[in-house]
Image (cartoon, rainbow, N blue to C red; front, top):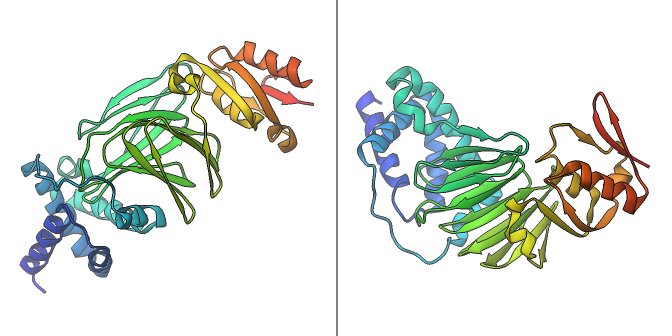
Length: 311
């Protein structure tokens, strides 16, 4: 096959991936084509860079919700496979078309320091407000906009794009939207909380998917999605309050880490899982830890390695 043939196929796939209607079977064919030859990945990355530079705006098909196929693709990991291929393609294409031309294909990381949030304007006009000590990795692909919340919390105000769902991944669960406003709080390795302030989202964990509308919230633990009542303090999350209703102590500590300049540890897993109730001013870590000590008979010990909560 000649180079011209490969470039022609790459141009076809770039055009197809940027069209509003995406067939999952075509996704399989695309993955097969991308994986069959490094020259395919190089050509696709080069053509994608040209597309991004020459086609800043594209008419989108208007639909009212994320299609089940799109949600399934993102939540089952097929989208992650394709994302990995693009990482490889972008790396190869640096040699072919130069670093500047493939910048949009590579992931970008944004973070904040404890006690200080950050506001980020994304390439499509969407906006992200990071809480303290939080971080996200952003990559925009032809078929969806991918965000990984690696730590902390963030509020997303997403510009609607019906051909490219916006997905936030916390490692064990995903939130998929088209264009809406919502907040995601990563509460450790296997837990997160989601609240929706405008529009609607799809939350998926394992093989379960749950829809949430404006004014609704959910907590995800492992592969289980629990709907929860949305408190006023939850809506005003930047005010620095945390209202606990039979949640693990580890949730509170995770919140305190957003503001504390010292590491906070719970060495005993049993204490970490202890359920707590109360209203805590997490933006004032010392006061919140004192409330925990008094209310639950725990010890709060300061050492050179940080603050330790023990029995």
